[in-house]
Image (tube, rainbow, N blue to C red; front, side, top):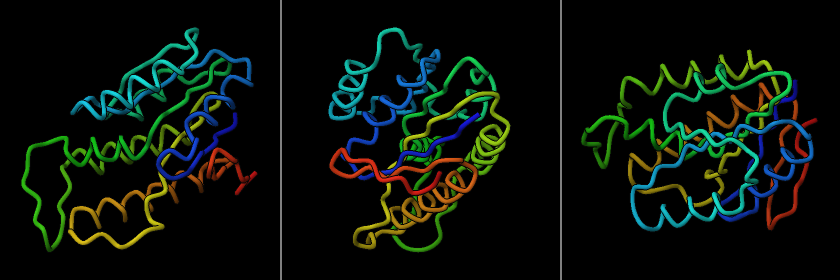
Length: 182
């Protein structure tokens, strides 16, 4: 079993690269899509991903329970491709209606810690190959608002935890992969 983290910025080519890796294995691919159509712009992004995706692949839309999806779909003859972890992180953050302060401590919804822990445990115990796509959001200016800073911090912590548990990590910039680990 090989777990691979594919990192990059927005429109870096990370999803396309992850899809190429998945196709090259020759295994049945279970594509776990985490994005939700909240507005027209996001709907257009999702449509672009759907159009590019191999029609033979099975798509599972799972915005919150990634751990359960890995446990259900991973297997020796299958590859689970998760796109993307930062969309999932956003879904968790806004899973419950609450008002976040502009300054001060951000208290994430109760499901955040539970689902994050279930996900990391399922990734560790996956019965087959897993490829995970995630944005690297911590390389720019420090965000002004507390919510944005919390998101950048949590995305960085999540990427570190996932990379530590993966056999391979790849950075993608301008469509070009750079092997970081493995």
